[in-house]
Amino acid sequence: MRRGERGFTIIELTMMIAVVTIVTGAASMGIFQIVEVTKHSSDQMTTMRQVQNAGYWISHDTQMAQIITVGDDPGTPGQEEFLTLNWANWESGEVHKIIYILEDMADALSRFKRQHLTYDAEGVPTGNEMTLVAENIDSASFSDQGSTWKLTIQTRSGDEIEAREYTIINRASM
Image 1: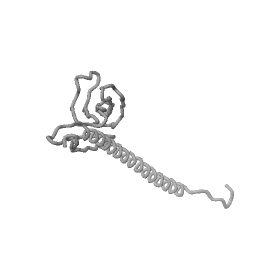
Image 2 (image 1 turned 90 degrees about the horizontal axis):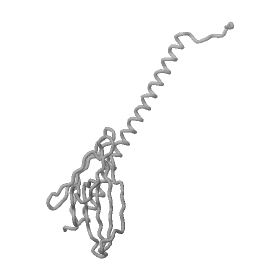
Image 3 (image 1 turned 45 degrees about the vertical axis):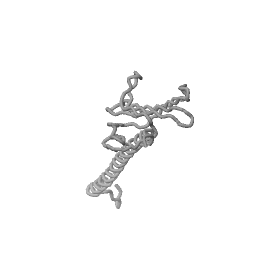
């Protein structure tokens, strides 16, 4: 070294490393918190949206139904129905058949699929649509409560669980 030039002392270097370590640790903790909160919020929104979507569609179709069949229909081998709903359009005679299928997914969860079959007044098929209604279904039940129907759905995503219970009044029986 030249005369008059000074370097850093070991104490100054140690203090600088300590300050950088503290700042880096604080930044890492902040980033970790942001990631965890984002994951928690995402799981919570997923469970809530899935349970609401399933509840909306099943409630909507149940209110229209004239015939409600709970459970598997032995007349359709190869698929296991959760719920089958039928109604006829009084003006056109068109018949609607909605089949909710609870299909297995990974992690012991299920998904709701909605099959909408339509027939003209003579019984000729005119439509067949399959729609994914909801995923991450942990459990679901549909039961007759006398003058109403009770739908209970629970969904799960990560550590988040959302459960809802719907009471449905069938408009066709009013």
